[in-house]
Length: 138
Image 1 (cartoon, rainbow, N blue to C red):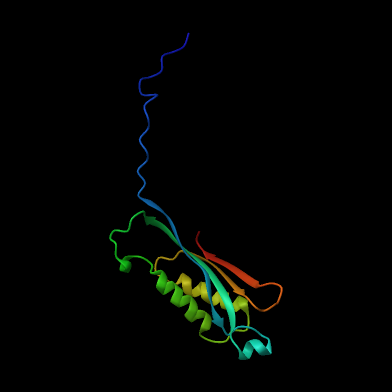
Image 2 (cartoon, rainbow, N blue to C red; image 1 turned 90 degrees about the horizontal axis):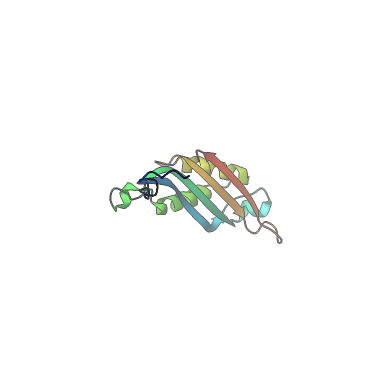
């Protein structure tokens, strides 16, 4: 003999009300020339690099409180900072450059963590060389 089920057992549950989510800003495939490297040719001529960056913005409202650029992280500004940091001066090591860039991006308001990849595109004929750096909170 089966027991009758409670009347509310088959009633659909209301969907949870979600108003926030984890937000990441990504820029990928940003290419430009930088003064980077220890070889004589690298010390005198800039070379093409590619930068990919992810910035963890943590918990954010699903919708900004208004539709104004001044209240969010402007990706145009992030792009300019990446280019400026990577072209400011000659750097010998890719490890130095990525550390400087990660440090600078972590200083942006609201940024909790960064993942950065910098690739030297033409250092070898048969491959590219890249360094990845992750810092902060994810």
